[in-house]
Image (tube, rainbow, N blue to C red; front, side, top):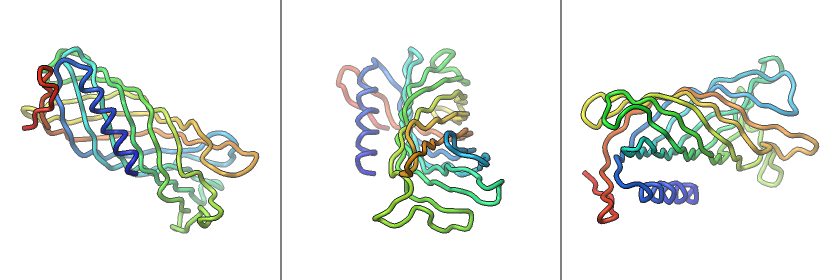
Length: 213
């Protein structure tokens, strides 16, 4: 968890230094995750879950930007013809390169984004809340998953430097989520999220510092 936070902050800092001028903001985010498995599975179906967390936004006058996020997201799938569920709960750290359309300062800014997400498993439970990840000596699910996230959205200025952030995204897992032999099961999910961003400060290219409010 600590390594995830340090990596997120380091990439955000390096991204900000690469631009001449920026707008930096932070805020909460909440959404719905619609998840399923793909690969060596049968009789699975899409399962709704919760996404909640926080984010860091950076945008430049050129339109390029960056978003670092730290999220709690529920993945998994419905199984056995929807009679049960596999709920895989992750701490996710999406690191998203973003491009904003329109002019810098416009009230409405469409955007597209793409980047990796680091997923750290914090729980695996069935529909009734029972642990399905075995004990510490015999885990069923891998503690880490690497994914790719891409999507599109809109940022709408509610008032000066306070923005409503909306996006729809698709996340595809790249690693087998289980430790089972002769199987290859990967995560797969759609997400719809809404966030509210507040100004944090402005990057000064002359001093190389982030000037907070």
